[in-house]
Each structure stands twice: as structure tokens, then as C-alpha cells.
Amino acid sequence: ILNVEQSPQSLHVQEGDSTNFTCSFPSSNFYALHWYRWETAKSPEALFVMTLNGDEKKKGRISATLNTKEGYSYLYIKGSQPEDSATYLCALTYSGNTGKLIFGQGTTLQVKP
Amino acid sequence: DAGVTQSPTHLIKTRGQQVTLRCSPKSGHDTVSWYQQALGQGPQFIFQYYEEEERQRGNFPDRFSGHQFPNYSSELNVNALLLGDSALYLCASSLGVSGRASSYNEQFFGPGTRLTVL
Image 1 (tube, chains in turn cyan, green):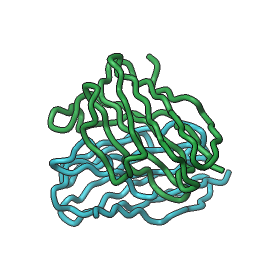
Image 2 (cartoon, one colour):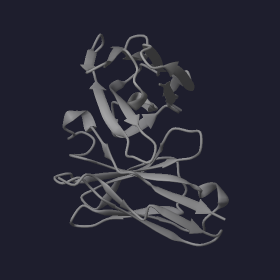
Image 3 (cartoon, chains in turn blue, purple):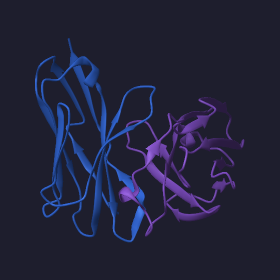
Image 4 (cartoon, chains in turn red, yellow):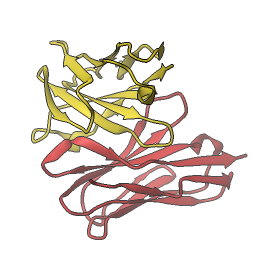
């Protein structure tokens, strides 16, 4: 059973704080890692797809890194804003089964004004 | 360009009943996957449909079945509902299937159908 773990489970920060969370995963047969942002009552929104060890991706104030050898990815948010409040999910796909996303349980971020 | 749509948004059923959930994929997508998200957990893969056939399946009982239509839309059917089937059911669409995926099987999600079983 492949286990994708995210930490922390939840996070409360003040507006302007920078924050980061972790996604840990089994590295054997790694194919791709996906980060999603999910606001309440909306659809999960794809942030990044990462495939190469050492990959770094950036989208505005949000960035992510990937280490496929040790099996982890970090998501960073610089200068958090209230609109960043959401659940951030990471999902993995593995070689031989690339149609199936295996999700972590998510990190719920609350940014207080 | 319409994204992934799902219907209904909410549904209440009683134990033993049957339910059908519907999904229309993003324009241009031909593959539909279904996920179940129980409270406090990440989404769990149920199955994936491509070319009107089930191509991959997660660890769900046969009570969960699906269908894909020629226009690529899909239905998820659950028979003999249990209390534990109460969850948010997400549909995701993508282009291609395992082995032929583009963009590393990037999947686009709908807003989900909230199923409550009483």
C-alpha cells in the first residue's frame, strides 16, 4: 500500500507570514507529483505537476520543490494572504499506474487578516 | 470553456438504496476518473474510464460501478448503499490514459457531489 503523508494537518498563520508544508511519499517507481489547491465549495485546482528530481516550480507567491530520491516535496507560500486559505493536497502517480492519483490527506491553511 | 461539471451537488439517500452520480469532462478530454473523499481523508481513487471501458480500478467493492458514454461523460453507480458510503465524490477528467497520457496525466476536477446516506 502506497502511503502519501502531508504535514502539518492544519496551519493557522497571520497575513504576511510565510509558510511551508511537506508531502512525503515512497520514491520507488515515482512518475509525477501533483500539488492541488482546494478552496471550500470549489473544485480542486492544479498548482504544479513535478516530475524531475530537483525540480522547482513557482506561481506567483507559491513555489514548490521536489526530491524524488528521498521522497518529499515542499510547498512554500510567501507573504500569506487571506485568499490563500484553502486545503493543499499533494498527489502522486507511479510508473505502471499513471492514471491513478494517490492523495495525501491534505494540509488546511487558514490565514488570518 | 466549461470545466468539469458534476450533478447533483448534494444527495441524500437511505441505506440499501442505489445512487447514480454524473460527470461531464472538460472540453477536449476523453478520460474520466472518480474519487471518493471521506471526512478527514484525502480523495481515494475508485476507477478510471477511457473509450467507454473501465481501465483502472482502486480498492472498492463491486457495488461501485460506472459507465462512460460516447460523448465522454460518465456515471458512477453505487448499489446497496451503506452509511460508510457517505462522502464527497469527485470526478476528474484528463487527456489520454495510462501509457498515453499527456502532461503527466494532469487531472482537472469538478466540484463534487456530496452524498449522505442515512
